[in-house]
Image (tube, rainbow, N blue to C red; front, side):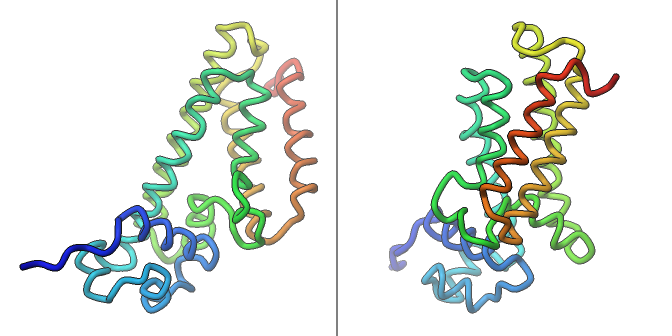
Amino acid sequence: MARPQKYTQAQVVDSASRLFKTQGYRATSIDQLLQATKLSRSSLYSGFGNKEALYLTVIDQVANQSACLFFDVMQSSSPEAFIRAFFRSYFADNSAHEPGIGCLLVNTVVELADTEPELVKHAMKYLILVEQSLTAYFKQAQQAGQLNDQHDPTALAKFFMHIKKGLMVSVRHGTPLDELSDVIETSLSILKAPSITE
């Protein structure tokens, strides 16, 4: 008779996610993952595959959580309020106040661009979807009269994605949050400007 599982997938992925966010992919060993998840080596490999497979699962979870976090805000907020929430997602909980923790998707692209093309490709897929969603959101905001129609929605989406990526790298390097808040408020002023493409 098979022994019942003493863990849930969510618990394992959350523990692995915390470790990957703090240390990065390359610096995280299998032994550290075993300690963090409290799994045996056989349970980790049979339930989640190798380190790369577990990391891909973590990326999927991070992307899905982010999508759920912003869906309601997108439906009910002004463009300025939504983008402020979009930027501030990196300190949505206490863990994100610690130096070294930023957006896992951005961290993946920055850290592994030259060594792990499959992981980078997986992360980029979600970042591209985020940019496309922002473009659609800005178009809807223009149609609703919430945003100046002289703005190019695609250019706005690219602009804020680049700011977001810069913020994530800064978080990872321990930049004080008050400095990042100033960057957020300055970048939001673009929404009040006549156009970023003129």
